[in-house]
Image (cartoon, rainbow, N blue to C red):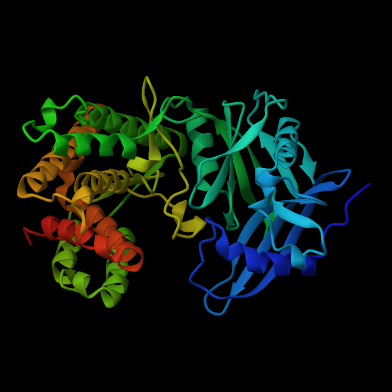
Length: 459
């Protein structure tokens, strides 16, 4: 017997109550005024069960609306594992609605559709030529991501659903496709994607790529190294068994190879630093300094670095990662892999797809080394001593240098040779970090502010 799914009105009200409690909902500080259903695509149905792919538009008391996708399941009765993912049942007409990505029956339908390259309603499932999808594999949700939801099928295929949508091709699919096309060894191969027309434009909903087993993320590895350095009071960073510098150097080389492959696949162009990049940095500084008094004290010194960078000559720009840090890299037994090429989430998709300087990625990684080395000394951290502070700086400098040397071993040019422009990109990242910390973790604000002080010390 088929199940009577909720009406659009019932579902919209249930989602209005449910969405603010989801980890990936990015507008928790904004009051929802309306949720409207823009797309409902039936995926599967059976006795007492149905699955749909749902796109919604969420309107707020202030600011622009935001579009989300919420794959849903519907059942007459929920099993215990699904209860915690249920929408308020009082608004769904007595039928239990829930996040379908936690239901094996729903996610199996996505896998079979991908394997057969089906077009279901507005949804188009596509694969890279020659890809074979094992549709018999079972799947499960991977971890607790901030902005997306990823599934793993059979420990070999990763299927990532982009929760928040903007019209257009997601850079994660675009860049993985370009890199896979030139045989890049430093990314997981793209296998397929799901798209639909949104606002009349082909828009990425999800992507599938190889899942990498036995991999550790760079952030976790770096923290182990820093903790060991603090524990071994009599040893220097180079004497640790968990010294990270060798990996930092190999990581720099991997990033350089990815940049070279992106340039080979998608091309490059030359621009003057004052064209867009430095102007955008100045604009972001102006906005942040207006709301963060501690940052305003550094405003003139930061602007001086930007002025110097604007006079540093032309720069070659290309497609880059756009949001590179230690959490966006995986160490496998044989190499480093870069992941999550979506770019900075606060930027519109169209802006994330623009060419930029590879130095932005380098600067992002240098700032990440600083966070890894310094964050254990943050406000409230136990046993903060002058020795630990010295060792933290030692660790950061050692690994930042190793990363740049690894990068230079591939490109033939050390990023530090373009010191003014690199410092400008580091400061731009630190300004962004200051804004984030001031809003979400005020006790961490000194970390980017201290970095800004060091980067502008010569001004």
